[in-house]
Image 1 (cartoon, rainbow, N blue to C red):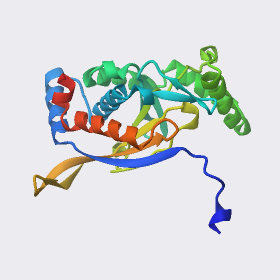
Image 2 (image 1 turned 90 degrees about the horizontal axis):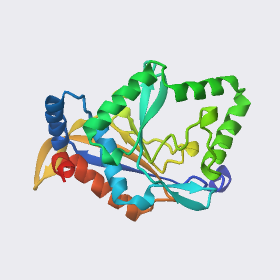
Image 3 (image 1 turned 180 degrees about the horizontal axis):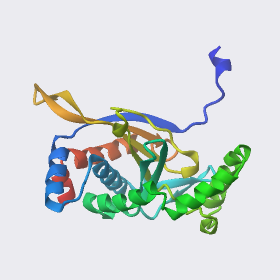
Image 4 (image 1 turned 180 degrees about the vertical axis):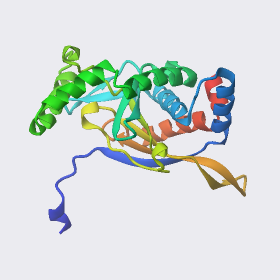
Length: 256
């Protein structure tokens, strides 16, 4: 029955969870808010940590082109998903060169972008939405695949028709904790060519073993989906190590 129930595997997704002690991260966020007046959150810190991890392994900051070749990105952009219309619509905004910006700059820029998205005043999203609304349902899938092929595989500039190049960047970050979820896994988006997706769960008080004794610590669970055509377990482990260093001790990692 199993032999006849599924087709041959064609999905390169690898899934995993990463539990991180958020004690120092929360203290750093509180201190940073008081010092700067900017509403920095754990999501901004996760985006920065992901960008720093990719900077440590630039070979995985890449796009699969034409199903065969690997094309390296020349910058590290982080796509933050944004809920609009009370959560009914999920869109997003791209923070470019996130590895070169601190979490305060990321938070400030993303706040500006999110306000435009939620107010329906983002030009590129508006153009794309109008295009999709005009297409019959049967043509939406072929149109998305055509735009993907023209933009990524052939490298054509589609901005004249409202489709920016590489609009989803190097990594996607989405906070599912705002919906009351402590953990989740998100799929790779085929037309985005983004090899890494991170979901941020709600922070929970959790028993943790510290130096042989049990303590209750705030722990955040991150769901990670990666493209196995670009990353393998060794590279994923190195990304996770660098990522954990930033989240578990942001003061030290960011100052360095």
